[in-house]
Image 1: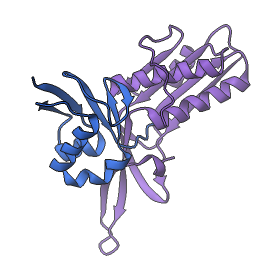
Image 2 (image 1 turned 90 degrees about the horizontal axis):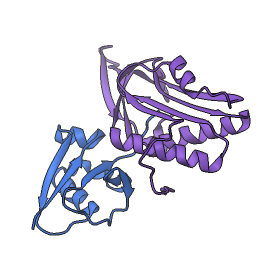
Image 3 (image 1 turned 45 degrees about the horizontal axis):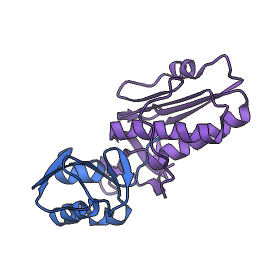
Image 4 (image 1 turned 60 degrees about the horizontal axis):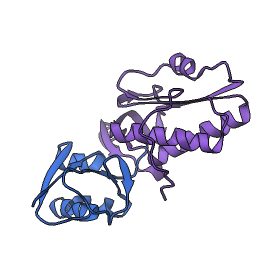
Length: 164
Length: 83
């Protein structure tokens, strides 16, 4: 289930990993992925959606085990470079705390000489993050009482199988 | 000789205890899944997570039968959903 190599303890100087309370900036992550050797940068932006399977969502709350999440990001970058040797940059920044609809929760950017490997590597990094990074999402749903019309907010921790 | 083990709690585990970590002293050797068993005895409402919880020790994923050492930091990882 965990195809982990011995985890690297140092970040490749070309890469950048972060867990942050502050809002994520698309232009900052793009600049971090920039490199004269790139012919392509693919960036994935994960955003807070207004519903899950028809249930209205008011906001999301993210929690991370930060030191392990950063270790997993490093390990993801190592796996990316094993599969696509030409990758120049791997950037993974994830936000935690309380996020409202439309806000960016995660940015993953990969810079490569060619677009094919950039698309593939970015998808691989994002999919692996979703499965392995110790980051949890609590969904706050809007529940309307049918009798009174009263709205209440109910929070539930989202299981992987039910999300995205 | 006693063994001090820190357990980091997140998601449903953190809510059940209403705190971010637990510190246990064990008199005899224990595996990481035995630590989870102890927690489930204390908080039976968490039993629904037993089969889907993965384990980390000192920031690495490990199997449930991993023996712990004095000072280890354990994390219980219910299904994750970052992104």
